[in-house]
Structure formats: C-alpha cells, structure tokens
View 1 (cartoon, rainbow over the protein chains, first blue to last red):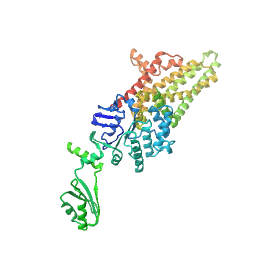
View 2: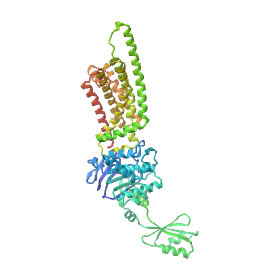
View 3: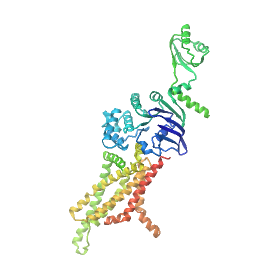
View 4: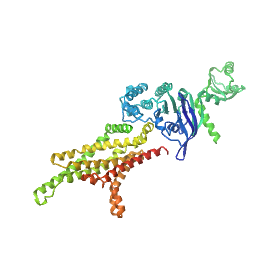
Length: 311
Length: 255
C-alpha cells in the first residue's frame, strides 16, 4: 500500500533523510522510532504529500505522493507534531472547517463531525474554545481533525508528546481502536508506546534506517546473552565471586541493596543453580527474575553500534 | 473556488470574533469622519462666501469639493490600516503551525492564496461601505451626482485591493506579523510616491514611473471615468502580487 524507495530529502545543504526504503501493507500499524532530528517528521511530511522529496519516490496505492498529491490527500489523515489548531475557534466549528477543507460537502460534514466527536470523546468540550482546552483535549481535537474525513491512512507524528500519563493511556487506547480499520504510521521516541501499539518498527537514526522488523524479531536478533537479576536479603561479600565461578555466567554486576545483574549465556537456564546456591549458603533469597531486552535497549544498541562502525 | 471560500469564511470568522476588526474599523471611521466633516465645513464656509459675493459666482460642486478630497484622504488612511489587516494571513498560520492543516488538505495552493486575499478584501470592503454613510449624508443636504460617487468608490476598492494583495504577499514571506505589516506599508507607500520621481528623471522614464504610481490611476475614477488602462493596472497589480505569493509558498516546500 505504501512503498518508499530511496527517499532522500535535503534542507538546503543539510540532509534530513538518506535513501530510505521500506514498505507498509494495508491495515498495518507501523512505528517510526528515532531520536529527535532523526528524520521521522520529514518522512511523514513527504508521505502526507506536504513536502516533495529531493530524490527517490514515495507511492501510496501506486500513486506518487508528489504527482498525485491532491487526490492522495483525500485518503490521508495527518496529525503533525504540533496539532494544527486555531486557538480562537470552537471545537465543533474547527472540525466543521477541517471536514469541509478535506472535501466533505452538505450533510456529510455534520455527520462526520458528530462521528469524530463521539470517537474522540469530545462531546463535553465540543462548544468550548480550543485555546482554553487542556493539552490532552487539544491533542484529541488534533486527532479528530486527522480522521474527520475517514481516511484510509493515518499519519500521526508523536501523538502523545507532552501529555500526562492518563492522557497518554487514553490516546493510546484510541489509536488501538483505530488500528482495526486503518493503516497507521506513528512516530515516537517514547518506547513503550511503540511496543504496545505497533506491529512493526522502523528505526531511523541520523536520516537512515537502522532496522525494520517486528518487535520480537528485533529483540531476538540482538540478543546475544540472557540477563537475570538476583536479589538477596543478607550482606555477603563472597556472592559475586561464587556467581562468577559458574561456567555459563559471563559477568556479574552488583546493583543496589544486594541486587546482582547477571549476564549469562543463551539458554543456560541458571535459575535453579542460583536458587540452590542461595539456599546452601543462606544468602536469604528474595527474588530471581529474567530481564528481557526492552526496545529501549535495542534502540540504544542499534544506534550506538551504528556510531561505532562510523567512527 | 469552493475551497477558497471555505478558507475565507474561516478567516472572516476569526476577524469578526476578535477585537481586531472592531478596533480597526472604529479607528478608521473616527479618522475618516473627522476629515470628512472638516472638508464639509470648509465647503459650507465657501458656499456662504459665494452667496454673499455674487462676483464669486463660480459653481460649487459637492462632488469635486467634498467627495473627491474625502476619498483621496480615505485612501491614505487605508494605506496605513490595511497592513494591519493583512499581516496575519500567512504569518499567523505559519507561527501557529496551522498552515500544515491547509497544506495537507486536498486544496490547490492557488485557492489557499485566493481565499486569504478574499477574506481581507471582504473586511476592507465592509469598512469602506460603512464609511459611505458620509455620502448618504450629502444626499440629505444637497444633490451630488451619483455616477462619480460609484466610480470613485470602485477606484478606492481597487486601490485597496492592491494594498491587500501586497499585504498577503508580504505575509507569505515571514512568520512574523510585524515584519509583514512593515513590508506591506513600506512597499505600498513606495508605490504611492513612485510617481514623484517623474520630475527628476527623463521624459520616458518619468512617464513609466507616473504610470506605475498607485494614486495616479485613482484620479480618473474620482472624476467619474472608468478607463481600461486603470482597470488593467489595478487588476494586473493584484494578480502579480498573488502570483508572487503563490510562488513563494510553493518554493518554501522545496527548501
């Protein structure tokens, strides 16, 4: 549905993105992940037909985003990083305007506006002035604006930025509901968000794709060792040495309050062994738990490894 | 053009819902009315003298002695007030980041530009029409000729159109409203005084400068003549400014 090939964009002499190539299938929910200034917004601007690329092509349903931009904009809903809200307008008036400017006419305008007000839970504030709403509500109005014309594709640039945790959960829930009927591209540097919503992750760093994979795929491919955390009650100086004496233990890192981070070989299943040691030596076992690699680790690893290669 | 109207309607809403329109219109009407009644006072003084001295029996015309100078003065006030009306057009959209909404909508750029122009034009026309109460006042007192009044107002509106188009163009160049207003005022004023250069330059250059001057084309409208060359001048001035505005916004995407 969305095909991006060798996409490159320069802002003056500065290269924002370089040779991006990826595909997104219909109905997929894809996350763009990357630090600030990595080129996420630029890519999204090109996909939403606002910016032309310097070279390379971006096609949506076979149509070029530059050549056929006017037609394509009808099936794309775009929420920029800063929601494009007129602070002096009422919520309903604003959504009416957004619906009309997106090409809806007559009775469809009103019914479309009522639908998004319902979907985005904006009923309570529909008569209020946008400038006086809380950031969370403003973000929801921004989201409502992006989907008022019922587009096939939703492009959401950092939809949860600047919100409090409760608002983040609400927006996230809303996006998950939308995921069933839309192709969604969303960007974020908040990692748990991507893990919870997206089926596939495209990691962008310094304008280039660092990785494209499912979440499990990414974590698995980067896992070269397993990590366990061991916590005990009693102070004991010999613990570290004893743990290290096991063959499959690669390293032991003492943490706070008698906690040890143990890195061991893949599939070594040392939990039993640790438990036995703790009981035999009366360390006072509190817990043993596996630490799975988070997307954050994956991300850091990818971006840092990249730098190492360059250096 | 449906989209242009949607955009203009939204802009008009924000004009009429904010104090901007009311403050500007009030200031405009107070200054204009003050000037108008001073001119009228001068006229009545003259006609009184003419009545006393039969020797001065020249014909005193309301059109020439009241309406013409009033409209000339009005165009000076508009020169100073229009930059404030147009400065928001694109500068504010860019600053508030709302321009993305328009850019991501299935609307050609030319319709966005025209919509912005239309909104400011309607605001200015409404202001000018409100000020025409003064002419109605003259109809109560005497009997001015309606023809030159209509063409005079047409001339003022066309001239205001030039200022508005320059204003919309200037607003597309920056995201700072003050910069936009100053550019508009500066350029409009320059186009106003450009004709003065005629004396210092040669005959041909002088004629060109004279023709480029925004005010010179007003004179015939005020006298009741609609000359094609004046119409062409004003309309091409407006179209050129809007075209440049379109080019600027389009090229912004490439940079």
